[in-house]
Length: 301
Image (cartoon, rainbow, N blue to C red; front, side):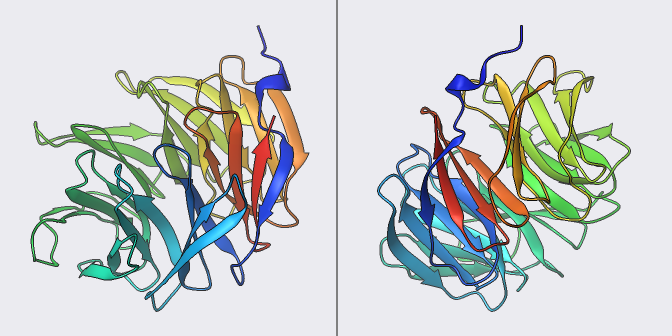
């Protein structure tokens, strides 16, 4: 049964302005009370999106900032981008605690592990690298370089690193077993996202198709189409109930699909240019979107 659109965040309730130029990512923090954005203007920004308040700007990157992640206790940030380094920040003071080096090219994606002790990053140099936040060393503690092309997106579970690559694969590395699983999708992967139950991985591919994979078997469960995704890195995600799939589109639209039957439940023009990022609130019917048009928008039901 296709679900109705009434429980979806499809009504614009606010706009966050402050970035100069394209906003490349927007991320809710763990409890959904705050969000972080980053972009072409080389800055990170911390907001209260529910009140429309800009709280702090973080400046140190020499090139555009492509991704940002915050620890579960909201005390530290990590960011990455065009200057090949990872910046590890103190949230309240805005101070850079450490710069992690090791990537030979631009860094596309970065995540903390569950214990906020390790940072994992993915880059254009065909590698995924792990860094220890507790050590004074700026060098990686692990390098995974089995990829054939640029690694665009990385996610972590308790025991695994999952990465999406332009070589058309989603690769899962079991850290304890030292084992790699490769799912071949046949089209460049520019973003991956995990379902909230962590049983599935959603992959955005550059043939304007989202693909849902069963993580245990690698089986292709469903494909979602209608949006345009040919040349930009664009986020995809699932709603917090795992009932719907969400993605931006290069024409400024947002699409919601029914998870099970892949029907388009809602689509609407959200921005005047490419939608780069979508982030769904962990509990409430609320979504954030960012765009090349320089804005971040807040959506509610």
